[in-house]
Amino acid sequence: MSYQGIIEKYRKHLPVSAATPVVSLKEGNTPLIPVPRLARWAGAPGLRLFVKYEGLNPTGSFKDRGMTMAISKALEEKSRAVVCASTGNTSASAAAYASRAGLRCVVLIPAGAIALGKLSQAVMHGAEVYSVAGNFDDALEMVKKVSATGKLTLVNSINPYRIEGQKTGAFEIVDDLSDAPDFQFMPVGNAGNITAYWKGYKEYSDLKKASRRPKMMGYQAEGAAPIVRGEPVKSPQTIATAIRIGNPASWKQAEAARDESGGRIDSVTDDEILSAYKALASQEGVFCEPASAASVAGLKKYAARDDAFARSAATVVCILTGHGLKDPDRAMAVMPAPKSVEPRADAILKELGL
Ligand code: AN7
Image (cartoon, rainbow, N blue to C red; front, top):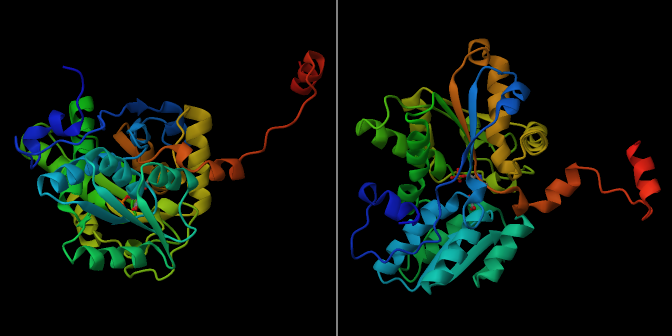
C-alpha cells in the first residue's frame, strides 16, 4: 500500500490502538538530503552532512508529526475542541488537522510576531485565532489555564502525544542511514522537538535498530536563549520568530537530552542564522525558514570551535524544521529586489552583460 503517514508507518512504536481514529495528511517520510557544499560552507568539508527537510510536511513544518497524534487522540478521547499557543507553525498544523477531524480549534498568538504564511494557514483552516498582547510564553500560560477547565484539549508540545509523534523523525533518519548519525543539530524553541528526537533515538537504540545515539546539539537564538543563560528571558528577541521563546516548557527534558547524549545547547546570532538561511537556499536549493537555519548556523559555529570535528568525516544531520515560504517577508528583506528592465531582448542581454 502507498505511504499512509507516521501513525501507520510506526504504529507499533506509538500509543495508538485499533480504536484510535487516525487523522492524517500523510505527514512524515521527508527527505534526508545530502548537502556537501554546505559542509564546505560550514568549514567542515569532510563531514557526511545531511539536512532533514521537514518543511515538506503537509503544512510545511515538523509540527505535523506531533499533530497527527495529538488530534487523533483528542478525537479518540471525544474532545470537541483543541487549543494552542503558537509562534505560528503549531497553529497552522493544529488548524489543518482539527479541520480534518471536525474539531473546533482555538489559537492564541503573540500580537504582531508571527510570520504571515503561518497566520494565513490558521485562518484558512478555520481556526478561531486570537492575538494576545504579550509574547509566546504569556500566550502559553493563558492556554494552560483555559485548557485546565477540561473544555478544550491542549495541543502544545506539553501534550505527550505531540512528543510521541515527533519522535518518528529520529526513526526515519535511522531507517534512511541504517544507523543513527554521530551528531544532530537542531533549533530549540519550546524544546519539545529536541525532547522528541532524543526519545526516538533512545527507543531505536534500545531495540537495536541503531548501534549508537547521536550527540544532540540544540541552538537557540542569542536574544531568546534561556537554556544557554540558565534563566528565563522576559522579553525574547530574534528575527527567527518561530523560536522567540523565553521560557521553554520542555527545558528540563532538553537539558537531559544534551547531558545524556554528550551534546550541547548553545546560541547563534541573528546574523549567523541569516547567513545559514541564505547559504542553504543559494548553494543547496533548500529553502527553509529562519528558525530552521539555526541548526546550520550552529553547525558552523561548532566547527569553528572544534578543530577535530571540523576535520572529521562524522555523519551529521541538521533538522530543517519549517519551509522558507512560511516567511516570505524575511526572504525579501534579506535579498535584493528584482530589477526592472525594458521588455526588449537587447535590453535584457545588455543587463546580463551577454
Ligand atoms: C520552524 O509553532 O513553538 O523547540 O508555536 O516553528 O520544539 O519548540 C514553533 C517552534 C523550530 C522550535 N523550528 O521547536 C510554535 C512553536 C520551527 C518552529 C521550532 C519551532 P521546539
